[in-house]
Image (cartoon, rainbow, N blue to C red; front, side, top):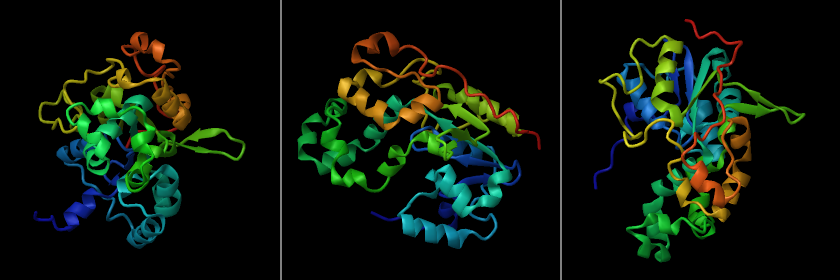
Length: 281
């Protein structure tokens, strides 16, 4: 197999997306449609200034090596804004979030092939990966999954949007929070609010489809909730309680409620833009 060389172009793609032209930063929680967002931005001819902004590349290398961070585009608010690039605090911030139940199962599917390679007991489920999802402990607690990219799923999405004050109160910092459940509509809203000339949503026939599939209509309920049992529900509810509360997602308490809930909107209300921020250039 021929390995791709780490060219300057590849390095630039792996940096946090920063647009000097439109003065915004895109924060990218894992498994929330962020790769599609980045590709849509590139297709709209937006230049990523992340790798060229100021001269913070040395700080990035040192912090990444110290904290064993391999993908800078999944950095949280606190690490990115306070340690690496505080001058971007004046830029507008944009991100996407996803209901924790679908996000966690999506992560499981992404690493399914790794699970099969690492755990012999997973091989009988080759054609039915959903059968190995439960119980969570048999794959999630495996030592190999305590390393690398799993940390970005462990990290609550609110760590990309909020910080917690000393008194425990949560303070939101991101100006626009889109939802994967309302993806194309919210992409177009971002286009309008940031003044981007080309629409980012799929209604623009020139936009690439990328990772978010046509088979998932917007506002069509939970995609993966039917794979859950009570143990996995409790696991997600406990691990990402802040995401459910502060990102206004519907909490599913009992497995008996899934048939009635799975076709409901996963979120309880829209996340309004911060009122004290201007999106005008």
